[in-house]
Length: 361
Image 1 (tube, rainbow, N blue to C red):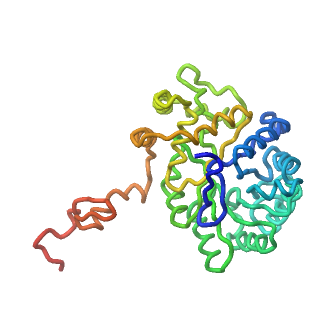
Image 2 (image 1 turned 135 degrees about the horizontal axis):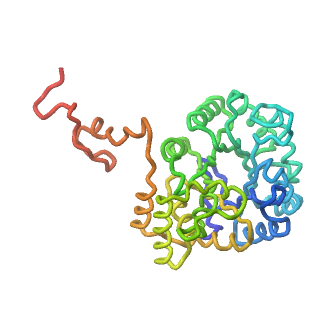
Image 3 (image 1 turned 90 degrees about the horizontal axis):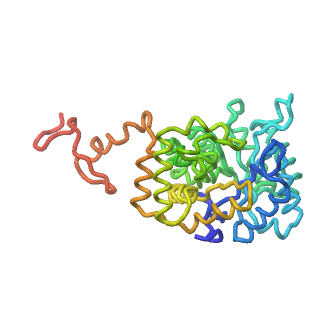
């Protein structure tokens, strides 16, 4: 599946590449990341290979990420119009200003104007609510976003790092009002982070939100560089905070990934990416790259086709422990189906169900 085999994002007509280029590491303002020159090389190579979907945020690398994209893409209108540029609001770039971040009308409008200026563009293709602001009514946020869409400054809306129940409330309100609704869901999702399968993934499938996972390699833990012999995160960034996950359960998973990688003459990272891309609801996986070499390597995962047995084994090794009420879900067919098969799901009747010959009271 090449980068130019596009897919529609959620229940919309927006065509995006199956891998999205994450720009969180563009700029070295935090003491790590990618310098301007190599960031531009990564962008150019991604586009050259057919990629059209680039994701950033208003406060990534202290807003330098947006400026790098603006300088290299935004100022060239013909080039910019061929791409889907996504950015986010919620992050506060102004210490001491309580309205500098969050999801209130004042903050969202200001953040949009500032992102447009840095990106050097007249519009944002996909505008993400970066994370839930519990202090702002969701009606206020959705009404503000609708104003931005109607003004032409934003084309589509997405939501990231927000509880499923709040996203559902937001989209129901938007559809009831005739406003633009969220079409994309950006969440952490990987073989080492599957708790999203309890509420967020089913919600996205039900409401028509295309899932764009971030940190598909769990901050590098699934990149292949961490093994039993090399178990200590050595680089900066988020990877430095993941050491607690280098335990026996993770090593068993890495062992299996290495086994599958050898069978396909590929890498651990590509296997982890290929597993994620075939998960229900996933539209476009966000891949970050600090170097051009990393980009080239990870994009080869698009050509990898895992066997069903390999996917099943990875699923079993990383199966998340569900909590109530999802923990009760396996019991429901016995209660609902009366001993029949419904949509391929069979369970014998519950002891509470009437037995042959018995009649209800």
